[in-house]
Image (cartoon, rainbow, N blue to C red; front, side, top):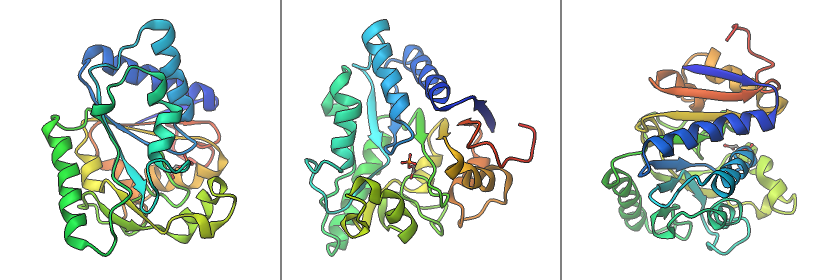
Length: 251
Ligand code: PGA
């Protein structure tokens, strides 16, 4: 595990963008696992800049997003489908046929339909040869994707109930009203994430410092889903000074 501590959010974002750009230059057909949330916004901004100014070419890439809220249409302004289009896909030359985002319109009561869909998502990743790199944020409760504390390390794409903490944290995108935040999401599992050949986990700000500490200096535990990165042979954490502020070890 490598931990790279950058001075601030912008430097963290640039560093991560540089790594992704190198990956795409090395392998134009890269399969990228993408994340949403506030954390990767700077990374996407920098990748857009590299596309516009330096000709970084996404045309042969395939992308798979980690998760999507259940119950939102793709057109809903807070769906992750909208997020990705608005903050990344609409500004680069990626082929929309090759950008996959989990379907947020599954019927939570149709268990068989959910199972078939989730297996399909897993199979699509496999058909593309697996994820070359998975970008991750980290929840203040240690989640990765929407794998909330207690998620099995063997989990695959499935539906998860969101914790109160996650819904509170995300209420800022829903008129600061937790009642507007969906209760469920469809998310890649932890085993899906761990199959990626490389993990890049980003964290910024004091509110992530404890989660980062628990993830990389604490015991590996299903109660801190991000702690599984300790088991990945190619995991890189790119974090800013604030997110690193609780670390004890001299990384
Ligand atoms: P954030 O979310 O980037 O909006 O802080 C990260 C996460 O919940 O994984």
